[in-house]
Amino acid sequence: MRAATRAERLLEVAHRSRSRRIEEVLCSGGAAVTPYSSVRRRSSTELRGATAWRLSPSIAVRDLPDAVRAKALDAGAPEWLASLPALVAALADEWHLEVGDAFPDPTEAYVVAVTRADGTPAVLKLLVPRRSDAARYEIAVLRLAGGVSCARLLAADEARGALLLERLGPAMSTLALPQLERLPILCDLAAAIWRPASGQRSSASPTAGLPTGAEKAEWLSGYIRRKWDLLGRPCSRAAVDQALAAAESRRAAHDPARAVLNHGDVHQWNALRAGDGFKLVDPDGVWAEPEYDLGVLMREDPVELMAGDPWARAHWLAARTGTDPRAIWEWGVAERVSTGLALTAIGLQPVAADMLAAADAIAGD
Ligand SMILES: Nc1ncnc2c1ncn2[C@@H]1O[C@H](COP(=O)(O)OP(=O)(O)O)[C@@H](O)[C@H]1O
Ligand SMILES: [Mg+2]
Image (cartoon, rainbow, N blue to C red; front, side):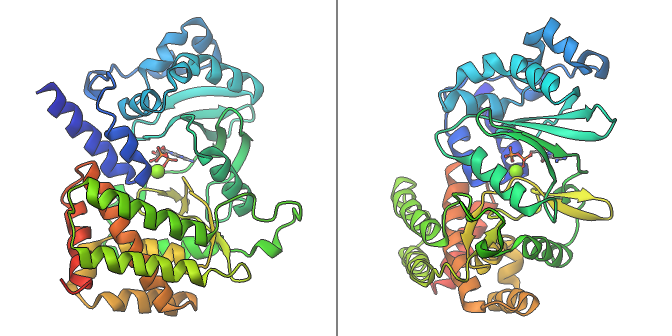
């Protein structure tokens, strides 16, 4: 019963986050967590100010979302949990922040509302330390984007996985916008980030060490091969073969001269209200042809995709951005199977089954 409750709650969180990387959190199984509903919400007076953190450092960890706690334990970083209050206090001192309420829905970071010394609202994001370079990549993308279409990065400490961001509003996913309204917004947000490496000011490292489209394609192939068997082959072999062929085609097509900065995970849970528009958070970062971000948009909303001609979305995205519909289609084919498997692994239904059913149908099965 308790396990079921925990799983349900984690799935609810996962549904909000929808990041592929949450799989490791949700599959961890062994982490001791308490249901979020049983966690007492602290009043704003308890939360406010670095002093409170220093006086009662254990308070901070109680406010941590269960999924983030599980993530830290799964990543073998219990010391991060223990040091979190001191880390928040130290950064609050260094960056002159008044600490407010934590956000309940992150899965890979402790995210808390803060106020800067000049009174401007901001957000402090502390990433769970992982072996991957997630913090470095996220900081690099936000620096390159310079606040355009992405949350503005106000300060960062790569070694401590800490980001100070402009504070944005609620996620698009909470606003119940129809898919036909979401798609142009998300497409335009992605396109506004695209910029060539050659245009970067830092000639020492114009690509900021981010993975290339070719590396991303290789990663997708490896992931699909591994997971399809591990998960008991939840989609057809034809769908897998098509996804592997699509990934190989995009790998071979990688051309550094065409590569631009891609956000890498554009979806409605990562688009937050900014004025009367939206800005993106939580970038993965890939130097790839622009069609990569559009392929991510192809994999989303599989039911709507299959309700009409699925190629129509690729053509629509290509026409809106002046890009190649076949490349968009191929990234979509690879991303749909990869993410369908990732969501299957965490039991996120019905969306996982919908994505894989779309993959099967598109593969002609
Ligand atoms: N700049 C921001 N402004 C306001 N809320 C934010 C901001 N960044 C993150 N959040 C909140 O934290 C949540 C998780 O942030 P995100 O960066 O997507 O973390 P994760 O990697 O865990 O998905 C968001 O859904 C939102 O509620
Ligand atoms: Mg996110």
